[in-house]
Every structure is written in C-alpha cells, then in structure tokens.
Image 1: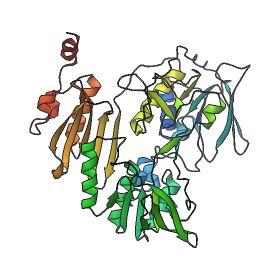
Image 2: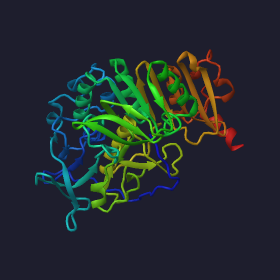
Image 3: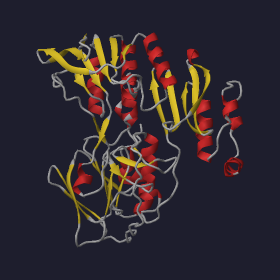
Image 4: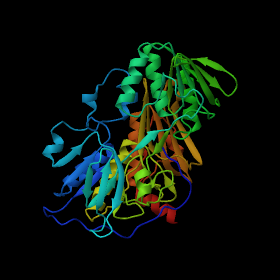
Length: 447
C-alpha cells in the first residue's frame, strides 16, 4: 500500500526526444519482467512505436500475475499457465524480444552517445545496449534477520517458486505461523486454514492491515478471522526461531511465548529494488523517486511499478509508494508516453483488493488523511463499507463484500465528485445515486 513522508516530490521539465524510426536504433530496454514491464512494452506498441523493445527478466519463465499466488494458486484453483500475462507467441508477434533467466547487474548511460542511451550487463556477461531505459524491477520480500531465520520451513512469498514451495509444504503442515497481518499474511492464513492445519497470525502492530485500512475494518477482520478458527495475536513481536535437524519447530515471541510451528510464512512487506537506479545516480527514497510522468531524477530514464515512489495521486503532495496492479499499469502507460516524447497528465484513482477466503475487500482512493468516516451496513453481517472524508470531501472507501459501493466511490473519485456524507450511511440508498456534480461541488467550495 502507501507510505508517505510528507515531502514534495521533484518535478522534471525535460522530456526525452522520441527515437528516430530507423533500423539503426537500439530501441528501448525494459529491465524487469513484471506487470509494469509487460504493460510498458505493450503500451509502446499500442502508441505506435516500431523501434526494438527488449524486455529482460530474472525468472526463467515468461512474465505472470503475482497477486493470485497468495490466493487462487495457493488454494489450488490456478496454475502457472493460467497466470501468464500473454500467450507464448505474443511477444515475438509484437516484436518484443523477451529475455528470460537473465539478471541485469550493471547499467550505465553513455557519455558520448545519444542522450539516454547506454548499455546494461547481465550476470552471465551478456550486454544489452539501449537508446531508452525503463526500470520496472519491482521489489523483494522483506526478510527477518533473526536467530534461526535460516531454518527450513521458514518461507516467503514473492514469486512462483516461492508459491510452489509453500503450497507443497501446506499439504503436510500441522502448525502454521504467519508473521505479518497485512494483505499477504492474511490471504495465506485464510488459504492455510481452509487446508486444515492450525494457523496463528502474529502481528507487531496493534491492528491488522494498519497501513491499508481504517480501524473499523481492522477490527472486523480480526473478529472474522478468529471466527474462522485463526488465532490472531496483535502487538506481538517475533524474536527468533528454533528448530531440530534443520527444520523450524518453534517461533519465539517478545513476551516469552513459544509457538509450535512446522511451517512459517513471513509476510512483513517488501523492499523496492533500487540497486540499478543507485548505480545511475538516480534519486531514491524508499524507492526510485518518479514524477507523475514516471520520470526519474534523470528525465531520460523512466521507472514504474513497486520499485517507485511518486507524488500522491489524489493531491500531488508528498510521496507515496503504491503496491498494486492498477498503479503498475498506470505508471507503465505513463512511462511509455514519456519515452515517446508525449507525456500524459492522467492520474487514475488508486484501487486495491484483497480476497481473504470469502471476505472480499475492495479499496478505492487513499484514506490516510481522513478526518471523518461513515460506516454503511453492519460489519456483523460481513457485508459493509466505510467511506472516508476530509473536510466533507470523499477520499476513499473500504468495501467488504459490497462491490456496488466500491464501484460507486471509484466512479465518483474518478470524476472529481463526492458523495454526501449525511446520506451515505443509509444502506438502502444506492451510492451511485448520491454522486454529486463536480461543477456544483467546485462552486460550493469556491464560495
């Protein structure tokens, strides 16, 4: 989700010139076979770019969707083929040179060639020259540097191999400990509980999903997961692990509690991958700093996806890091336009989702700065939503099993409109009927 440090993000006036359409062009190098990387390549072609495109990724398999790994894939309802972004022949048919199984370790910009050009080198020694560079390198799972963290049975979930390993271990696990009460942790906990073992969630904060949702929703999920047989422990830190014959057997908590475990999933967030950006001297601050056009501090280099921090999409102020499919796609589209010399200024409304068993959470907007809220429906019915406001203006919604409410707020925010706070709490009135006229709202604000 989002982190903000309140500082203003840098802006860039320079825009790289579009490449000449000649056979001598090295074209665009996209480093990272992520959602953003694939979308950027596709967007370049959709915008008419005919110069070479090389998309290079570390994994030996073609790019695939990651969000289902902690949900449908872990539950056995999806396989790798169904998660692929594109059919096997798509890349060649589109003139996209897909390079799998190569990790870019060095990248440098040319001091004498065209502005923005350079060369990247992979771990195997392969050189990839480019005229334009895009970083879509994603993020790595944050690790726990604790005693015993090397033991077998302590897992992370970031890529397909992680998910395959975790799914196999779940088949025989008796005591599963999930460290972290965010989206990934709770999604895995739900899937694990459905498979039968004892499941305990250990969260260091005083509520679940604290970075993503408001207290009402956190409290609802706490009770809902406990009703489903998951032991949730809040304000509980992990201090270490113990094992036998190289396998984890115990999780030690800061209050002295020792929890039996034969499988541990650590889901405590991610660390944006900034190594290549730092090599290039780009500004990094909990991610690669970009502007609304996906330009880095060197405007000839663009970046998109989980590796970036950007201006707040609703206010333009401060910096936020958004880990979502929607943001990766939107940034990649902006990056493609920028590389072609025609940056666009469209900033879509952020949206997110987390499906935890039969509890479907959908979020539109960002609620971090709200000063008021409206609860719509009864949380005890496991179908409700919370609308967040600041100075009577709608900021966001957390909707649990209420897709119509979510879609109405997403539509309103996309139009720059609001929903009257005094009527939003009546669940018998469709929210879509309460969306105000943006022009009238602006007039009332001005007066």
